[in-house]
Length: 351
Image: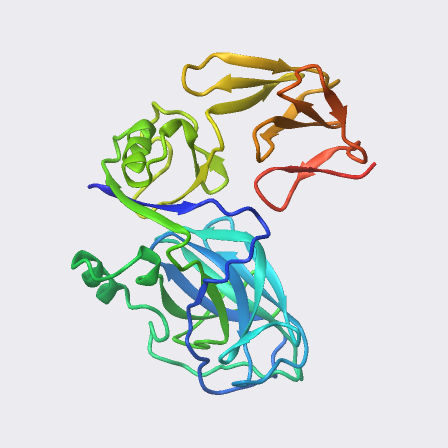
């Protein structure tokens, strides 16, 4: 079976996706505020897509009276908290939902179950919808979407067949909503927005799972005109670096969502040990070696104009000028350990 792969443009962490589209169009009926705990819904992703905002129901045209946390959970074995946002009086309102943008996109995998909950307390001023609705209500119907896609009338893959709404979920003790509730319950209690809009969508490619990453890049060059040497592809937070690796071996299955970062030139930078090296991506030759760190180099990135490289290690960061190879500078205030940042890389702690 061929794998359909969607390619999106790379967006730096913290960029707000203004073209994102809500899943639920309107809240369900019924309202209550007599429970304590994390209460919400469960759904199954039909395709892989990116979440950009989390939200909760409010009175049409009105605003919330107090903030409450909305949390997105993976319902698979890890039961991990994927994203959280405090949605309240200052949150922008669209129709009958208030939304808050996430610091970075969160990718949901097709075929997996997820749960979306709100932290509730008895007597809170904002009531939440609690009525039952027909399963699938408010969400793009996956059967109809598949038929439209096959007929070429479905548009971009995230415009149809996002997910199937299943029903309610809760945990009166707080945390992961592990208890299943009635089918179709609490439709539109909480909401999320997904990435939409042609400015982020590049291509949908159909390839054999045995095809190599190099073949994927060649197919992408036909669509974008961007040579493979200037393509940096990633599946989630993992870069696809081995051109000889197959799609199957790299974990790129049917419905996978990849991001493409367009490199500014034909050079690449790597780090190992106490050094970083700049390479010619066309022929594989080493352009120069950057030295000076007292400990292992953990991350190295080009400046936007590709004339400098910033490197980060356990004890700090340095910037080195590629045009004047002898120039190196320790960045002020960068001394301190590196820790995982909110996006793809590392950030330095003050110290």
